[in-house]
Length: 247
Image 1 (spheres, rainbow, N blue to C red):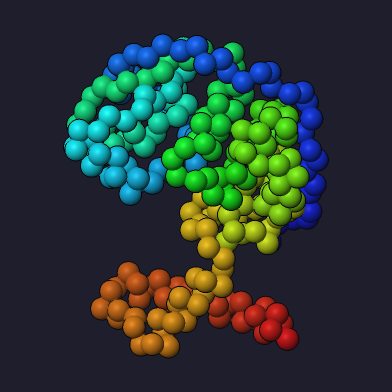
Image 2 (spheres, rainbow, N blue to C red):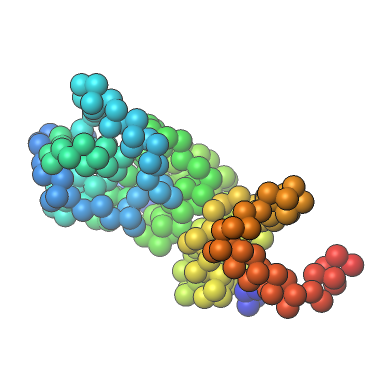
């Protein structure tokens, strides 16, 4: 478990200025020249199915909207799925809106705003990650709430139930580790967070129980059997803790 509770107050270090001016230049750019910076990406991950659908649309002759790119750094603000779809078809150039941003906070807010208004719906974990990043960039709660199309109260609630800390910084929690909200994560917990699937813990345990009870384990799968043996050994070490928790 983590080592104690921590609190996250509402960050109010000043609002980011007006929304980015829509003045931009539409240019055809080389995809190889663009920078996909995950720290600016509002989503947990790129959706392979969405990429495939866009690639199919391109094959069918459809024209996708231009992506949005920071003119100076060439960091992609919006359009990751469109880029991946072009790459899947070996297309080396793409139309882009080249915008001028004054700083990273403005870039991030525009990325959030654009992703929240089109494409695949942002999930709760996406919202939480965006709020954590906004806090790191000293973006006012009103500004990030507006970009996400949610209320400030909703942002505050997510800070309460989906935030922990690691190395002195706020960390967005997936539902799998939601019970650790308000704690300082250990290095093991922080490492697992990046690999966790996102469902609640009972779901995963019930899946294993179901496989065993229905006699559906693939006993010929050596890596699987080794993993089950490792689980068995870990549970033996936690036997007393489990009995105490059950009561």
